[in-house]
Length: 109
Ligand SMILES: [Zn+2]
Image (cartoon, helix red, strand yellow):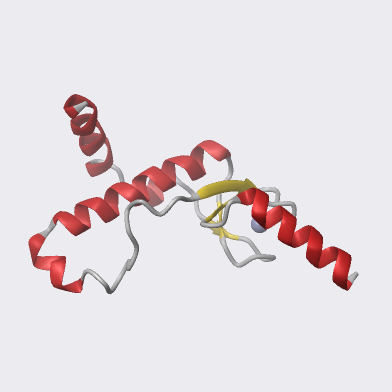
C-alpha cells in the first residue's frame, strides 16, 4: 500500500495538470469540460491528492478553512453532459441530479 502511495506521489509530482488535461468551459453549465470519463476521473484523483498534500503542510494549517475549504473525502462524480457532449465533475450524486432535472422539467415545461 505504501508502495502504491509512493507511486502516486511520484506520478502526481511530475505532472503539470494543464498539460495532461485540456480543460475547456462548457457554455451551458459554466463548468470545466473534460473530453472523457478517464480524464475527469484522473482529475478527481489529482485534486484529492493535491488537497491532501496541501493539508499536510503545517505552515498552511492555519488557513485550513480558507482556500479549498473542503475535506479530502468529499465525493465527486463524473457525469456526461448533453449540452457540450463532454464530461463534468459534480459533488451531487448523478442519480439525484437526474431526478431533480426531471422534476424541474415536469414542473416548468
Ligand atoms: Zn457541458
